[in-house]
Amino acid sequence: MKRQGQIRVESENMFPIIKKWLYSDKDIFLRELVSNGCDAISKLEKLRGIGEAPASETPPRIIVAIDKDAKTLSICDNGIGMTEEEVERYITQVAFSGAQEFVEHYKEKTDGGDAGIIGHFGLGFYSAFMVGAQVEIDTLSYQEGAAPVHWFSDGTANYEISDGARDSVGSTVTLHIAEGEEEFLEESRIRSILHKYCQFMPYEIYLNPKHLDEQPQPVEDQPAEGEEDKKTPEKDYPVNDTHPLWLKAPKDCTDEDYKSFYSKVFMDFNEPLFWIHLNVDYPFNLKGILYFPRQQNKVEVMPGEVKLYCNQVYVADNIEEIIPEFLLLLKGVIDCPDLPLNVSRSFLQNDGDVAKISRHITKKVSDKLHEIFNGDREQYAKYWEDISPFIKFGCIKDEKFYDRAKDILLLKTIGGEFKTLDEFPKGDDKKIFYVTDENQQSQYIRMFKDQDMPAALLTHAIDPHFISFLEYKNQDLKFARIDSDIGSAMKGGESDAELEKSITEQFTKAMEDKNLEVKAEALKDEGTPAVILLSEEARRMQDMSAMYGMDFGYGEKPKVSIVLNSRCPVVKSIPSLNEENKKLVCQYVYDLAMLSHRSLSADEMADFMKHSLKVLELASR
Image (cartoon, rainbow, N blue to C red; front, side):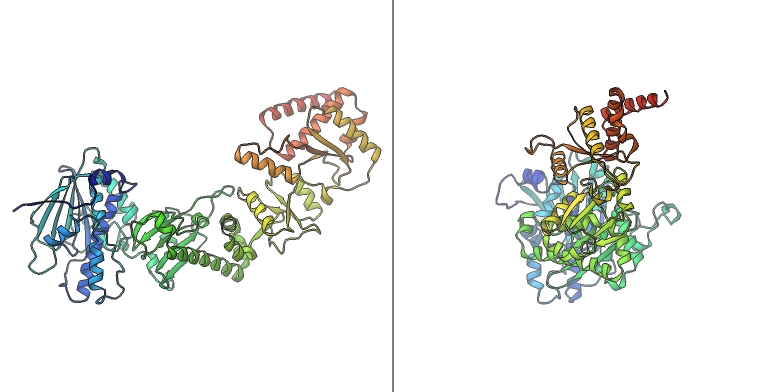
């Protein structure tokens, strides 16, 4: 006999709201329904554990089945089930939490309180209407003598409830897929959603199984990809791993376990550098694994991927309120059972436990870095180029992390050594010279090496910000690019004041169309005709303007300094050349200096080619 009723909600037009605004991603409905199934199984398992429900020979599991002909998608569990009264209470009274009542009733009889109970068989169930035009529930309670119940709704505020036909304990939710949502009748689409949200749920999940009456196959016995045909085809395999690595004690995990888990979860077949296994029970519950990946791009900061789970149920990637922003350069999984499954950003921002979790994760990362640095500094140095973007970003974003990490910050020298900030050689002026492009600045590097002068390689995109940050934190420390100062690395040899004055005047006149500051000095290397210098302050202003695409009001572009080498034979000859050749030689010397300073623009390269051709013509006469 059918019994009709009206769903009791506090606001009208609930279903349109659900369909549009309940979740940002439509496919999350499957996570909600499968999570409810896990919740129902968890409840029944707990009751069995305290002797209030009979045991069963059927292992706990969830079956997701597609019927393309009928245009239905069903999610079936063998959990606790519901009586008609419970269907009325938990389904028709939207947002009434069945799990809450369950925990309150049984918390004295179970250890661990609500651990393992997701508990959203209320509003979460109604996510089914995001893709379902009509939804049915067939359920049978575990209680002795309970009758099966059938519930039906067409997406309006009305529903029908009647006697059901289910003959085994549990619940089946059947979605009649709405027009335009047929993608959710494709097995590949459903499989991908299950992989995304349900990959590590605590009970086995099967998609379109054919022989589940046989003994289910554990996930670790599944055939490797591409080998399915070599196995007996009648076997059914779960789509999830019910015992993810992060739930195991670190002492029970091998390096191969960690590497295998990493490649499986992140589809990254480059082995991670190292990892941190988080296993906290007090004062909050937190488990997870954070991996330090190899940086495939040595110039840009590569984004990472940290997956947040709640009791093995995927919530979202890269939740900054829990995972500090700079740690999102890592890859990993974090499971926080104490957080509600459908958690809002505003809730996280104002939750004290979340802040403690974030600080704890940061501390564990810092501890791991110190452990490697102190235990095997040579290995730490080998890791440095991969992990330095993460550490530098962390220092900039979190000064407390900087305070922890400042003693293990390394600078790589042009000689290939790794020095801490305290160890790095500095002059009396506390200045550290640095290189941003080894190829472009090779001329300057060679001069520094010839004089056994140190310079740091700071070639990553984050380094300009990091340099400014270090200067801010260490007021007596200054950084200068290797081509910003002549210094003792370049000066040398006897000086001829009259010759240098003449060279300067003649060059300035020949190149009057350039905005140049010209001077001639005796440099150590006779083979270097000239070098371009730009003050550190001027370069940083230019870099800021380029980065933000705007003029910061510093007025005219700063003059570029060109230092002519009075010991170079070609430069020495400039005053004695006729006007035509003098102009050509000056232009060519300028081109060579600019070519060693930076990449030429297309127009500059065209001019350089013209000047080169004229020089060759002059030499061939």
